[in-house]
Length: 230
Image (cartoon, rainbow, N blue to C red; front, side):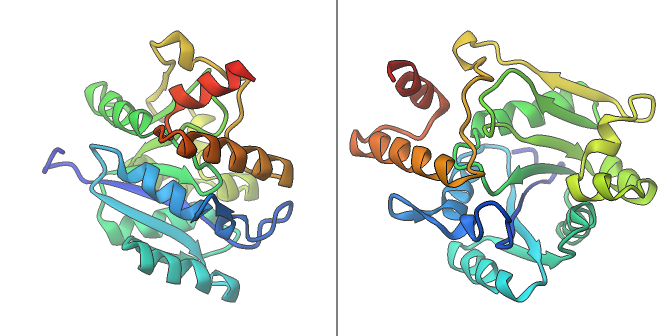
């Protein structure tokens, strides 16, 4: 880790998801979804702090309790203005770089976090994302100044809810980068490893159980291998 640059991974989470309510607290072979996501992020070699950023709604008290149990920091803020939630978390954490993680992705890839942060630093970028990867495995890397500028300059509800559209849509203002994995086997946008519906939940529960029954790591390579066989 670079002691001069603080990296905070911020996992946005809420219990009021509409298609699959309280999905972040659902069990996935012995661990909740949010615990799975936190564990994946903790495998990163560059992250200094892990945060759960949730809302002040009463149902999200459970997420605060879970964050405390898992030993991660918790920030509670606006339900709808997720960009403000990220900005406030960044301010409190005093982070130089924010890794945006969403809580419905139990296969968030720690190697993507590491190479994304390094790519942003080496190329002096404001923002980095990934392309041609399994859906739900990637993250977004954002420099604090860019997040601050987006917070102060974006006023559309869509931009506030989805955090990064203002940055991505203003290429003249921000220096953007996109990473496509060198390994061809990881270029699988046809594979989905996110949980949005009950069908997704059942599929990934079975997938995680299969991997752990075989004592395999929850890595993208292993996931793709199983998907290929099926």
